[in-house]
Length: 155
Image (cartoon, rainbow, N blue to C red; front, side):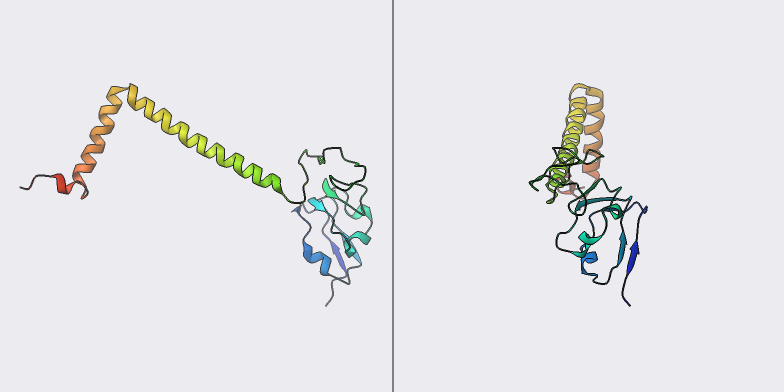
């Protein structure tokens, strides 16, 4: 059985065009319009022979057969000079932006953790009643655990 027609328009698909579509040699009809796909349409494949209208509505797609190019193509760009898509996300072939965002989110997590430790530490330092309760509870737990057994007096 050979796939001859594929219409996945208006399905809210997002991400890159799956490279498996380039291997289907008998595909006569393809419609990927009105989704959230983003990437260069693979070059030298049958995907470039379909009409541009079959790709419209995907703000991040670029390359032939569309008249939208991106950074590094050496052509005029229809979208903008900074390769922004309509939803103001940068389109890059190597996805280096995800690495930058990963560092950003890791920094937020580390900053939150350090901030929480500093605030709790300052609260214990300046509030003597909290500090006494905290260390008394900590000392009681340590005395009743097996870890503090070697420091207890023998009966």
